[in-house]
Image (cartoon, rainbow, N blue to C red; front, side, top):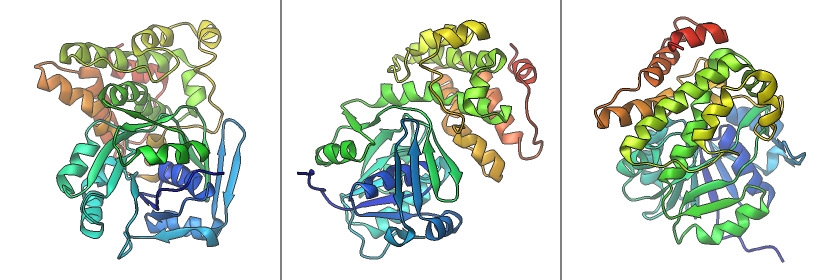
Amino acid sequence: MPDATPGEVLVMGAGTIGCFIGGSLAAAGVPVTFVGRPRMLDKLAAHGLTLTDIDGATRRLPAEKLRLCDQVPVGAGPSLVLLCVKSGATAAAAGELAFALPAGTTVVSLQNGISNSAAASQTGPSLNVRAGMVPYNVAEIGPGAFHRGTGGRLAAEDDAALRPWLPVFERAGVPLDLHADLLPVQWGKLMLNLNNSVNALSGLPLREELMLRGYRRCFASLIEEALDILKVAGIAPAQVAAVPAHRLVSLLRLPDWLFRIVAARMLRIDAKARSSMADDLALGRRTEIDSLSGEVVRLAQEHGLSAPRNARMVSLLEAWPQQPKRWTARQLQDALGL
């Protein structure tokens, strides 16, 4: 007999992550409300939701089965909110949730970076905000179609309100692990997300970019710089990828022919995968670079250090709308001083 559903879910931010995780839960029988922008809601209303993944699974939800809203519905009382907006919209989203929802409503921040849950708690102090982490890449591959191109398990801060949801997430194919201390896991994921800016500037699909040593050297240099700062800060990032971050630096610098052999597991990425930051650039939207390399820069400053390569990536992404271009591996290496 299927596990009982603890209640309803509200997805705050119907983007790639919100649609995939919320859609997976809805396909498993959970009542889910999607709150998003008209651009996305119109696609879902016209095409429904189609979810696919690297393991070959396909789930479809017809448009008439979707509950779509452009703001938190009046009188809503979800048992769980998945906060999936871009980092720059965190404060506004948390304020709307706090205004509309009962005090104590549990909100899990499934956002990039380190500071979003704290920002949401500050703006919405009546909410029970828990930090979360999404390990995998999800790409929008067509109107209403979302594809998970890599693997992994969701993670969140342990909380009594989340424990009844664990079998539900497992059944939905988006398993969730709870951690007493999520900060090492968040930093472990951020190490991997430092490639988002490299991928976005390359203009290439994720797997194709990782097959080129020049781009990998850029990625490795960003991780190496971050690891040096984390060591001073006394933070040991958790292993989120197939290898720990310090070994990943050496692995990324291998010649292409050897990398293909040694990193076969890491390269289990299909051709549809790309970074969300690449999508942001393509749509002319502000990127989340401040929540990725920007976090490294701020941590360095807190300890009287500098992070010039990550700071340079922040500058390149912020300047991109005025000077859009595809960066070759050589150009990007030169920009980072490699």
